[in-house]
Length: 586
Image (cartoon, rainbow, N blue to C red; front, side):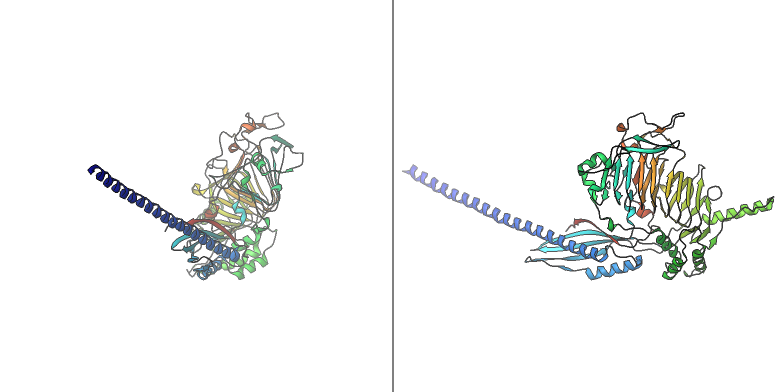
């Protein structure tokens, strides 16, 4: 009986224990369910607040794009800056509509993040940081986005291209950068060349469009069927039937094809840019610019009548420093044309040359130089200590660089040329040059000062780049440091035809034309053999040579905007670029 009572007591305790156990399990399940519901609700609030912040950013971007994208640039950069600041003040704290209960979203701030303008600087791009704040049931999210407004001409964004014409790539040129096509992109594996008066061709690979560390490497064209190809030089071009075929014909990927409305291309007017920069030398006075435009004579190398307006202004002291605003109108010394030169004549001329060289080598103000101006034997430098927006050297005639010595001649500063531009030999450069004539670059070594600068050369006439010193062997991949490489970005208002068959054409910069641009190139080494009627090409099969060993390489230099910010031309329209979004830390 005693044992029975003990067993009943144990059973009672077991029942109580089980009840407590199930009660604890039930509470745990209930707690987990409630916590999960709260977490789910919180997660939904986070997602909703993020979407609301994104909606606010999209609205701000749409407002900015509608206000500025494509805006005619009758205004000056300083005026655009003032408009931006006013726009920021008016748009800050703008509420964003939402139908969610307990939710709010607005533009917390639009902040100009660029550096303030310093004296003499020309601002061509404007960075805005837009931050949106959204709150849903206590869940707060801040989302930011960069928006860039700039007034650069579009050609500077591409390593190679044509605004209005065809881009014709024959053989295997190698482009590390973006490619712009105005009309049609025509691709062939046959490279043409001229030799001993004959028009010849050689089989190579199709062209290469490469990226730079995951960037660029895109082809911008109005439609996929505007990309065409052929296997030889006589058959008709065939439109690209499948974007996937771009792998064969451009060594690229279908995702690299970007459709673009050519009507939105922001063009450059070379003559208007010339007048803009000339007017800047006297403070960008609209009245002066009107006088320059009225006296401007198209197609005439000498612009005496126009430049006399600037020369008179250079004599003034608008800056108030007690000195003329410009250096005046300088004329290079000329050796006297006498039957017999005396020692005194020679010494006088030598002194004048030294004095003129000293002026060119230490410029501090805008100046007009009577052309032709030749750098080489007597004059080794054009050097502005301050490369500001108003400091331009204006050559009234031709600018010639002819230097075959081991030492480089130097140009640091921005130059306007009314005539032709001829560059031969070694040139170290940090300059923007705008010319109204034609440009010829022959057997040149153009190297950026300090290894990071370059030359932007904008030519109204054709740009011809070639080498008589051809047939350099290609023993390795393209390199920015190689003697062949030109640190330059060329633009021509005309058509262009370039060769990397006998010559080696390596460029750290870019090349852009308004009209058609045609490039012929092969891979590896090339040589001429006496008695042969055609060139001899690399012993390796063209199919076995990597694209980086092309005789024609353009390696786009994105530093063109920062290197030449004070000299780059102004364009008619503002361009709005929408950057990436990112979540701000709480």
